[in-house]
Image 1 (tube, one colour):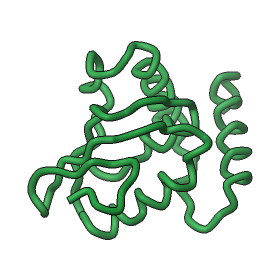
Image 2 (image 1 turned 90 degrees about the horizontal axis):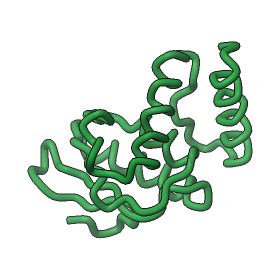
Image 3 (image 1 turned 180 degrees about the horizontal axis):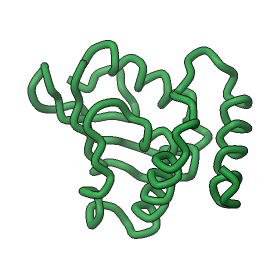
Length: 130
């Protein structure tokens, strides 16, 4: 059922599948992950996400995870991830909730523009100027 997806493993019911994250969610894979998320959104209206196959994680990958569509309860992932990964996700989730001006995942925009905007927002959040 996961055919054609490098960063996701799909199980469960067709109408509300369980989708596990897989591989390295890093800047190097940002565009590919973003494209797979768009394909998943088209196929499945409701999704339950799980972190079980997550390998490497950086801030760009964490920003994608905190904006995944559907049921993404990051707090339930504590204990399922290494502390460093969970803490990064919790920080990004907190910043996202406290800064509603963060844009949704755009499609068709060059990756460089996304990265620049992500870091600008991230730095504003850390500096407390947002």
